[in-house]
Amino acid sequence: MSNLQLAIDDFLAKFAQRYRERSVEAKALALHQLARHLEDQGLTEWAQCDQQLLQKYIIYRNKGDKKHECFQRPLALTSLKTHLAGIRVFFDHLVEEAILTANPARLVKMPKVQQSLPKVIAVDTITQMLDQTAETELETRDFAICELFYSTGLRLSELTQLDLNHVSLSNLEVKVIDGKGGKGRIVPLGSKAKEAIEQWLMLRATWKNLDEALFITKRGTRMTARQVSNRVKHIADKMGKSLKVHPHMFRHSMATHVLESSQDIRSVQELLGHADISTTQIYTHLDFGHLSKIFDAAHPRAKKKPRK
Image (cartoon, rainbow, N blue to C red; front, side, top):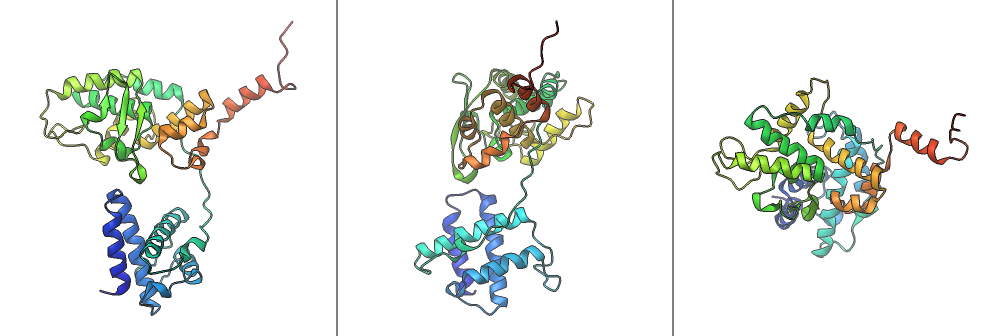
């Protein structure tokens, strides 16, 4: 094994103790691919890697290389951004270990990503979806899942990691243990979500309980992210509309609706568990209809005169 690969393995072993498995896997992929590229260039030590070389690598990955079996497909800008973020953290580690004196990756320019607005479900549509009647035991569970998503704005990975003792119905709060970046937080629970979870827990008690997970399958095992996504889609399909709904849309919708009502971006940041408020600022968008109403009501030259 090369010195490049040995340093990566040492970093990943320490990194895995603090972060989620998916995050570790993403950084492992980025670093092993970078090491492969450097080895192709004849490099054997990380100290030989500088800013110029890393900048060229980022451009190289963005364009793709049809002649190279590992790098044929160009990396999309969002993937490239994640790639470079992992490389930067790794080089921070090399500085901490005194392998390098400075982090050249910090000087590499991040690719500019055109950030698209999140897809949001209208309040009336969500109300119609969640006010449907559960016709099966599975749907009783599924409605509790949807209510919890919309009430708390949890990520899919956070919801699937919830155990029974993470939810306090008496205090109306949910304890998120494994948030993004390994950070936890406590979020409030709405009354509708509380009622849905209470109904689910009464039913859950009659099922086979093999796992402490809040949401389990009929076999008593923790629901996977794919299973949760499929059941959310099922609840949306019940309305008979061609509405494509995925779990993260509840998070986007909750953030947008709360922000439109409160105008308190700091509180929304706390609810969502964003480390940087710039991530939350994307939710400051307003749909044109809402914006028009504010304009008509507030602008002195737009206010409609009452009819005589």
